[in-house]
Image (cartoon, rainbow, N blue to C red; front, side):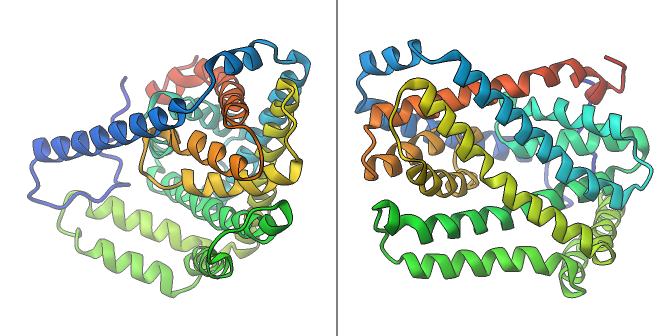
Length: 339
């Protein structure tokens, strides 16, 4: 692949650190993630009825699965729709078509790379180097992630508030709601204040004599630009909140297609909490965390573990099917060539 992500300026690398040492450190981190992923998946699979699982998956209603696919496509389009204004706030004349192709091509990286962060990096560098605005593209991607995290906190708080209604008692629920709400509020507000970008600039100042000093400075300046685009910032946050609940609809349709009787309220509680856990960088692409979290939470709400895993696996298949068309534009994004 022609794309070189090591020189994009989005990741601070201290001077004096040997390249081989950095590579060994990354390899060790990935090895631990793969190990933890395997352990979680083994723990989930250990208690399942395989014959029932295969029977459920084999008898799925294809029409309902197709409907789940369409809703998932709408979810992906909404995700692009909330990123594009953040991009235009950085580069006002960036072409819509190129941005869309790059977004959906980079989404394929969620499948082939160990974490969605790798896909984000490819999107920023792949689109940014052709336009000469890598730092601005990186800032738009980081802004999208920050607002997504803040929106995930809102969805998780709603799920925690509804948990007793669904029949799930969570120890320290009130405290968790307060903690998540405070962290989400900080993530939402700090980046568009004068103090937040200033702290970022001071942090990057330590690399001013490093070869990445210039790119990091441009990145921090680009991030600070959102202070003058607050209406866009908060509008994207609201769209992000809406987008958080579309996966609930997708998994509900998957459950219906499999003939699994699970209350919509149970999914409204279990899925946002599971997605919050998936954001923890402890496994590869959330594998094991998503399946384990869904099996555990839906199990607490009365759903058979095998049925819960069938829903999780069905949603994985739908999600991958939505991402695959981006392969058409992968070469254009990573090599700067027309597909």
